[in-house]
Length: 263
Image (cartoon, rainbow, N blue to C red; front, side, top):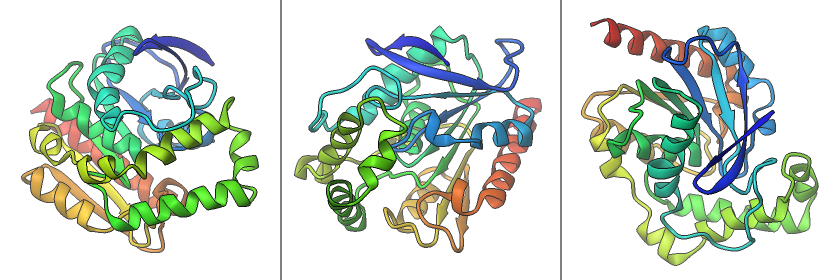
């Protein structure tokens, strides 16, 4: 484990696989709204084994062993700031010049924002797992249920193993997503339309936080640049529920990226 300062905050990060040449492609993984380096478990190593590329994982501000964040809502544009300010700074400081972004849930949204921002380093490709491009009613219902589970079940105790400040991690995410201004205002479809790199969008049929409308929007806005992967028997975490199918989609994406670079 190591630390880097980006966006004015101390963030933990790790590499899976040998780093090699700083100018070579690297996969950069962006976690979900309650994720962290540790919560990826062995998936970064599996992605490295499947692709041969080094894999960078980091915990955003407030998560894992990164600098704690105050409880309560963030600014409603916090994911835009992550994609346009924090992520580019982190990649520059860690000398990742040719990233392939792999994001889950919030992390997928941040990856799409960065790809559409025009701010370097420009990603060679973006892979999303259960990304949100706008807020659906099913999202807010599930997030409200998550608060009940956090306060009345063992969810807090289970998450506490992965975050130094679990209350800050949980409430900064949960309170923001339940703000009426966020529900009405969060929409990154324009970012998807501006992205020029290949996109692979993966989602589970039984995703409790979003419907196929998310995939439909990505397909339409990307103007043919997106491969859409809808997985059966899969909820909000394709890398856990359908691990092999998710790794296969990642390998296909890497092949597309390499073919595009060669052309």
